[in-house]
Image (cartoon, rainbow, N blue to C red; front, side, top):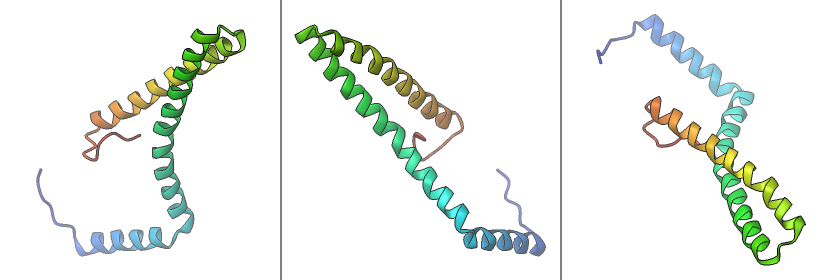
Length: 103
């Protein structure tokens, strides 16, 4: 990649934009919220997967219709969430995210 120098006016413009973003508290909160959301999806996938496995085992042991129907509801949610997590991870790899998977 070719290195280019910015002119004084361009550097001043970038500095003023950066300064304005640092003063914008709404922007800071939104960026912090984005970090929390990055951690939320893997947690949801883990909880849904554990619940699915627990309901599967309980459904096999007891054969109670309520447990089997609960499994039938939770299992697809776990699969869709896991697929969504993998899709976001693959999109981050495709975009060249060096920090790892964007979850």
